[in-house]
Length: 395
Image 1: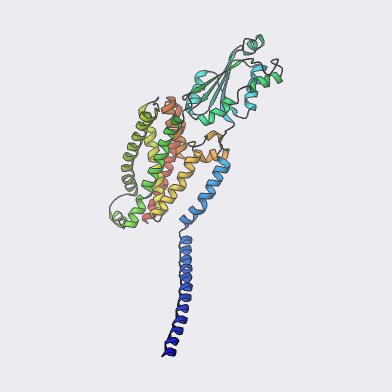
Image 2 (image 1 turned 180 degrees about the vertical axis):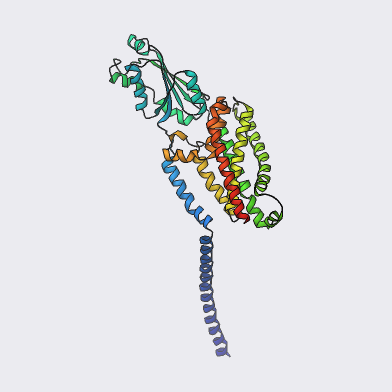
């Protein structure tokens, strides 16, 4: 009895150990099989795989090379009432700070004001008539340096660099006796945002970024949603043109975008004191154009994506460079040339100039016509691609 009792126990112990071993080995085998399966699916889903690889690289490149919180070579217009050795020395001293880059020589203050309102220049330097004569007499004439302060980060460092730089340069060229003496006065005008309030710059920018994000995602899901729900066949059976389908899907979101814009502008004015210096109709027209551009781009993504997840991933890949290269978070003029070229191809870049120009500067259509034309061109391109892609999707 005791031997028969012990033998089953020993046999049972061996079977239990083998079972545990088989259970552990089976556990790792099943996990390994699931890992292989997931890698195969990931490699088949090229959009997801590319998103996982490209987003870190894109962030590294943009933050490492394109983003500069201390912008230099800022576009500047010059209005000099005289062409003397001293006036040229002053301009050279300003340029040698590396903050200013003279792109235009204007002949009136009105012309310079137009350039600042349109965003073509960020600074305006005016040297008065008789400047050299007054300096040599010791009358301490004034030099006007007007800055577009709608972007406080872009203008603050440049204005701070003015202190003492010019007088030091003039003393080196022996126009004045000593560097410590102020041969003239520099009058700084911070246009449109004299207090440097960040909300005046951020709130109009948020209007563009929020509309970009929501409009892209809304429409990027439109076609893929029809495919996943199996309702695309019903659309194909209807006597309707692809352009009509696209307009029918886009137009409802236009009203949603207008409502979003109204809420953001109203909240910015009531909560943060953001002014509206320009025309309300011009702001509405610019916003409507911007909404249609983003809806067209989102619709194009919906025709490229195979499912809703891919559509969202494409939208995010477009949204990330938009907020980084448009001038919303970082000064646009401080970016290298290649980044500014890419930024000019983004709708948000042009809309930010327009909305900040209308709300903060009181800009009119002649001041914004270049950016408006760029948005119209982007809209036509996006609509053409969207219709062409949708035809291929139907085929």
